[in-house]
Image (cartoon, rainbow, N blue to C red; front, side, top):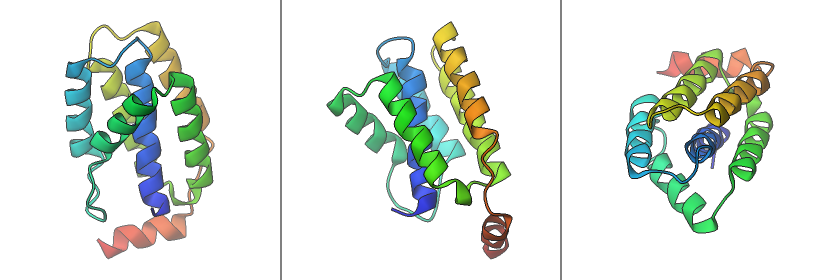
Length: 137
């Protein structure tokens, strides 16, 4: 996978962690998560469905919230060179929408989102890279 695809997968893992923070992922959360990913993270440069793949793998592996979060943050750091300010803003919005997908938003979900915001804030991609991507579109 490309670094940009890795970033999208990391956000999928973080969304999974947030969905799991309040217990088991509900059917409504899974459906809303899928819709959020399709609307916010649609990437025409690859042809797989990030949300379906992530949920299938996480469910199969019985991945804990902490493990999903830790892996995702590691991937964000590893691929941060490709992280534009716009993508950071989108990722934060996705996390917040996932938390709100199944009411109520719990304190655990809120804390995880705040932790994510603190950890992603200092990451800055290479403007030469992401500006060239914008110009190609």
